Image (cartoon, rainbow, N blue to C red; front, side, top):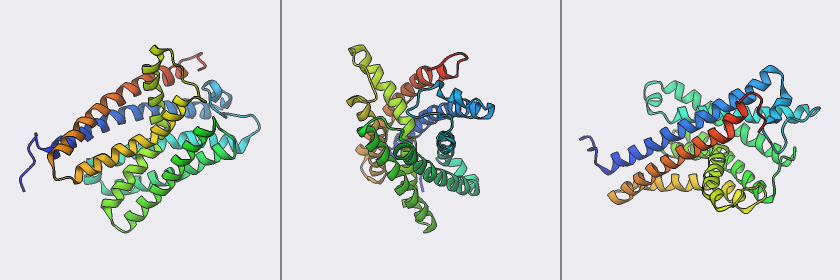
Length: 272
């Protein structure tokens, strides 16, 4: 079998996907580092009240042991599932260390299920709510995580690796909804702030970004999978160009989130 030329549609699509993956991994690992330093740091030091240095809908509440455990565990699980998920997409890991890939995949899917259930608990039982629109978005995101994580697990057990890959990719994007939400807020702010439009948690812009944080990645993934299956060059080249653009947008949003959301909270004496 001849290898695809550098300029071939398949090669272009692979390069576009790689560009986005690298950009996303940089942003996601910066988010993971923030989670470990902020949530892990305060938890290990016993300074649980310091968790409220960053505004949460319902953060650390003195006397609420069960709720606080869920709150901290949910945040730390977000870091674990983000890191484990990105490792699953590294081709060399799948090829050279398949056993690590399988066990890391089990960890990823298990934590995805627990994090989704924990998020639904925090929203509907603990009462960490921003408004009706946000509640619906979080709930839909959580339910989809549960569904696709279960489908990914079932298809792996059936050794249907084509469907397993598709469902696992959907799960990966959905569990990163929190990260997509943050870079989406930053990107929306960069566009709207010069126009004098503020983003508040009850407003239409925030609710729209909340839904887009998991819906848009899913749509892009479906377009990518269609382009993969297509025998025509045009859809593959178009998708490759789109992924290259998304890579730049992802880098910009991640850099803005790191600069304005994550680093200020980690700075000594700051409370944002």
